[in-house]
Image (tube, one colour):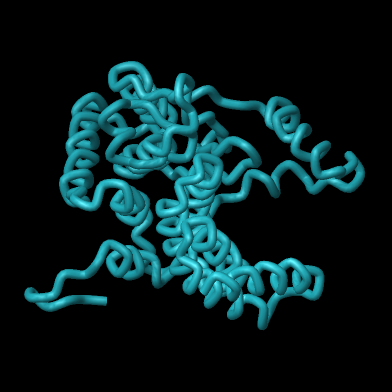
Length: 282
């Protein structure tokens, strides 16, 4: 998608252009652009330029080193030691933890936002690295000649298979999945696609805005999710309920009526009651 020199796409239109194709999915720029809902004047290219500067600094530290294991060690020393990236443990649910420009400035974030910056630097070295949508805590992995290494993006600490199985167990217990029914650990360590990564970032923000009752920001996040995952009809319900909370009843009713056409039978009672209440105030 392109625009003429006289046209200025909205932030949402620009996001749509970045995520419309899996083949040309602009992961880093799409992740950065999420923050435009909170910071409309954000200069995306300036943030990209800051990442480029960090890449240059990292390569200067390596002095031509080409061994992947040594590159990984140098990367982690630079990233966690010199730059000081870590988790924002004092304010974990601050929306800013999901905004790449904010994480670059503060050196603090949540696993997925810190991971994206780490992945960008690692990729600039030619390292084979991927993100992992591990339950409860986004991870990264490096594919080295010696084998696969799974790391915590907040610390750079590598995890053994046993340690990962222990981290996974509470989620299996919560889901009522027994040891015999559980999928092999390797299935939880598959590479996350760029689309999946951006969706996880947006879902984190959705949960935060929902809990903080920030309905305008919640709608903004769901609008992005609808562009990212247009086949997920349940997003119509989620946006409709957010509109209702914000008092935008006409849009709430429109979304819920559209969703009702494809909703499972189990939701009809709730939807009918909610839509009737909305019709009364319109």
